[in-house]
Picture (cartoon, rainbow over the protein chains, first blue to last red):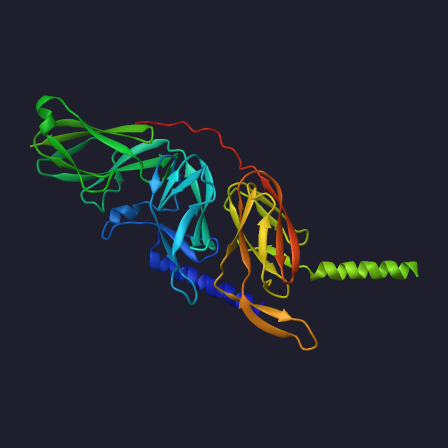
Length: 228
Length: 146
């Protein structure tokens, strides 16, 4: 029994170390040997704003990263599979929400031995919002009123998906569009930055325009006014 | 004489029952779901769509253990790796204790129904009666667009 307690204590310490090395936004496995976390590009702090422990939105996808901590062994070649593909599909290295529910995500070695597993929830998105900020890392404030910019100013725009009051994880196929009339179309530019769902809004000339965002069966708009 | 024979049969069957490996849970269910493994009765009631880690022990980790479900479409069992050593005591005139790797499996409850997971090991066999209960259903949510 003493040995088992020591093993459990050691497992707890290992899991704490695992959480510490992978950052706060991790979801530790049931066996405390691996963690799933959202994969972000180096320096992309805005990416880390959504905890991967949040439910994944139906229709959205998430590319998880796996961290493994095993006594006496470096991380083996692992693969991520879903125990309930009708709820959460694992397409290669991407998880995709199929319908609301819960699914175990299995982290297995190349011979099929399970190293750990994490239960992931999938939830129906109910609201689409736009978050904006002056930099990529600070695009975390939900826009609830028209934005006024001076010429030359820029904002980073990020879609945010909610299921009720909870922010959901994952990225969906979203479409950004600018609605404008006549000369007002020259007032703003909406630029991609290499991340599929994120845009950089640049104020170019005085005028008014509306940005429309559609995705995951939801839509929202954002009014922009550029002042001299 | 008859009573003596009955007592002998009961004692033998009791000892044999005690010789079987024991299965116990290593991981909790997620919120709102069930994973109740009764080690004494060797039964497991588990919610559909979740996974549970199970250990096999008899005086320590079971040796050369395998497990498979009669109906993998209801519950699938796969071997798991636990990076730890547990104590295993070999009974005898001078019992000895060895530190050996833990023996564990992960059971994935795939669909509602009943099946039996048959654990076979060099230390004896144990059957686990598994009942997978349907996942709770939720009322559809309304979508809101701003």
